[in-house]
Image 1 (cartoon, rainbow, N blue to C red):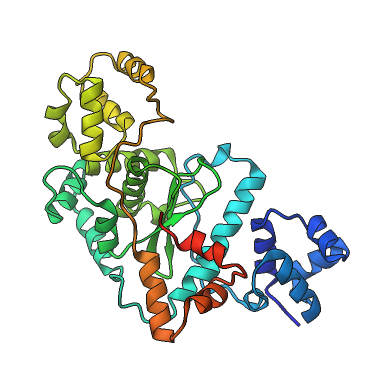
Image 2 (cartoon, rainbow, N blue to C red):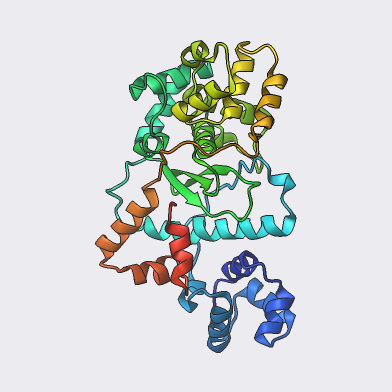
Length: 348
């Protein structure tokens, strides 16, 4: 019989298992593993054994890719990740974006706004020349006077799918891509809400600034700077935050962090750019004395924001296809173990 050799390879790599290791586990020669990956030729008996080792259902190995228009980009710290770990992460994302998530797109999607809203917004934003004008228009459109209360809700209302992904490293913040004509933002769920929000705003910037249309494997430094500026101006616009940055103290910084739901680091950077602090180094020294550093800020923001995109897709898939959670786990996602599905589908 024939299986999807490419998918078999992706699953093997995602499990961080070498050809030699899986050959040893299956009690076969390594060239046989290589042949399966290259040709897809595999006996039914061997497929069952492979399924048991890799913990995906036998049927899942027969899948063809449902989409191949994704371009995994925007790993802002990609080069610092060990190659073996990065390969495993890329394989997991490839499986999720090209085989699992598109399965949920097969049904008529009537619970998530279609991409026309974000496309219309992008067209309108093209008429503005500066990032400040673009973010100001977005804030006006959503009637945002001061802080953005729920960024996840704002982004999802545009028809953009947000996924909180369980990355096994803090070296990846997130990325954005296009899947079946829909914009998708995937962010690292391990981070506190202020960092999650800035990453979401950053990725929204890539989308709104048309960076994805000119994307390569790794986004250019100019695009990264523009996306950071977009995020900063959307979350803490200069004209709104500047009066509040006068006479900054540590206590005031923490109060602003709670209210605006951004990191202390982002606030100090903004204050420096607006010439509201004479000596940012001194401020950082004071922060360090309180135990607050760029990598270790106190998590003092009580309100959390959870995306509903994946949950709605799953519920719609179950309703329209008369499926149960069991069907979703085994058919759409192909997992042998429900725990993997729960880990992926959980936003918390």
